[in-house]
Image (cartoon, rainbow, N blue to C red; front, side, top):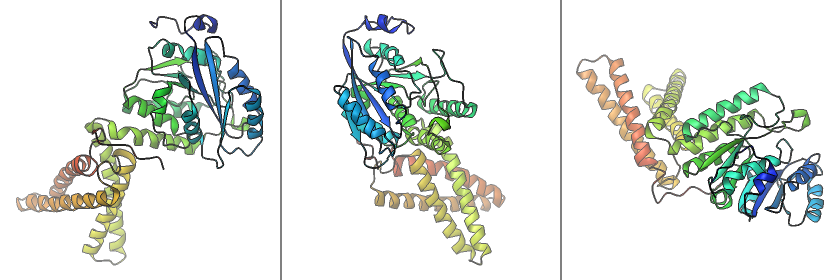
Length: 389
């Protein structure tokens, strides 16, 4: 069916256009005894003749009465699935559990805190049911419905993270961190979710972008909570989101962008090299020993940052072999650096200029060797992602 319907249609008119489908709604829950039951009831209210619901509540080892409430709901709501974690693992882990259990045509995510209005899910399903989309995201920043006015700095941080994510995914989303994400079931179940906490949002957006799927975005209502009312996301999660944006995107962006970010890693490693050398030499260690020690400590820092932010760890080699190849490459480039420096000095160049030239050449050589020898292209046919830790 061609997707010609306006996104502003009301639910009954929307429902009349489509054949019956099944929507699996995953509800992660951690200490939401005040809102869980009303959340489930509000979700059930969108069920209709053409929209069958499958509710999957995942209790992430709540310490309040959430699990008891969820068990009562499972007895009252036909077909509701309840999963329980014996240890608190985070929202991403709860979603991983719930998504794996889904059997519907489509899968949606619904937080148990009632910040989002389930009636918006009917609208978000339109491009999916019409066969025009693979993934639909609800945006709190596009005009639709009501919005509670809350934390400015939260919204600013969200926009900054969304912008950085867009730069690396080449999507033009307005709200990457939104809870409301609706997928064709086979799509979301094909994605390996590695993040256990709120890093799920940037991770799944990155992986969706890499799959070159048809992504739509629509405005939704939002009734945010204050921390006094139970809001859980904090500064730690903002830093994790930033890390996840880099981790799950940089290995797949164009080489020029990878090199740009590698300059930051190389620069930081160079600072570590200098500080360790100065510290050791100041403590009485001879120049050769201090220089060699500082060089290899900086190389380890560089390796750690490379596998954490830019390149795919174990892309070709297992870890021991990867480390051996890495240090061989570093050693060879170190020797090249020395000969370039000596060569330019012998031709009359000032030592500082010779070292600057050698360093610039070394940066290019280091990046090239890491990208193509130590951590080969992650898009190669035989590359497979690591299992989540």
